[in-house]
Amino acid sequence: MVIGKPLLTVEQIQEKVKELAAEISRDYKGKELLTVGILRGSFMFFSDIVKSIQVPMNIDFLIVSSYIKTKNKGKIEIHADLREDIKGRHVLLIEDIADTGLSLSHIRNMLLKRSPASLKICALLNKKERRKVDVPLDYIGFEIPDKYVVGYGLDYENKFRNLPHIVTFKKST
Ligand code: IMP
Ligand code: MG
Image 1 (tube, rainbow, N blue to C red):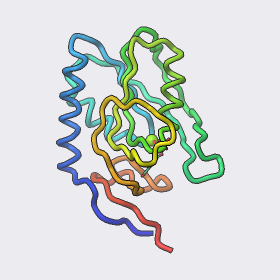
Image 2: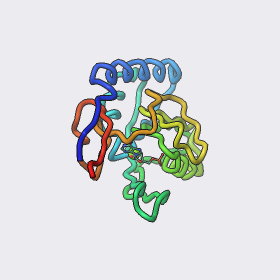
Image 3: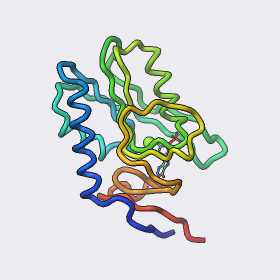
Image 4: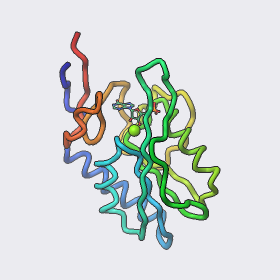
């Protein structure tokens, strides 16, 4: 297997993170946030963006698995649920990538049943072409083509998450 072309540099990512954080800070001015990271993929993006959001916040995490290659495709498993009660709170989900949309849609429906005051989604990457279910994305970092990417939290078989930038990934045959 090989790592392919650089898609997004450290500088491009960091600049975008600051832009998104500024927009979020403006939108939630005067409110208090519950910022929820969807693990494991969003861990780097989450830790960068919360540093630049200028709104009082609590943080929490959801640990989920999405089966994208196996025969259980589309099945989402929740390994660890939130510790916070989200009723009446302004929840902002932080996700690495929206691909088919199945994971985010599942998570969104699950959390909406708990009656948050609001629920918005921020995804660093969006692969629109691959969408299977509609899910509203309130903040999007980059629209990317239908290519598998790794780095900055994103993995292939739980590897490459530690790369500081994002590259396309190809499995050699
Ligand atoms: P979904 O298809 O929108 O449900 O995306 C499910 C999950 O698959 C995402 O949260 C990512 O963790 C993972 N994923 C989708 N596309 C990629 C990719 O290009 N690289 C790494 N992980 C991906
Ligand atoms: Mg993910």
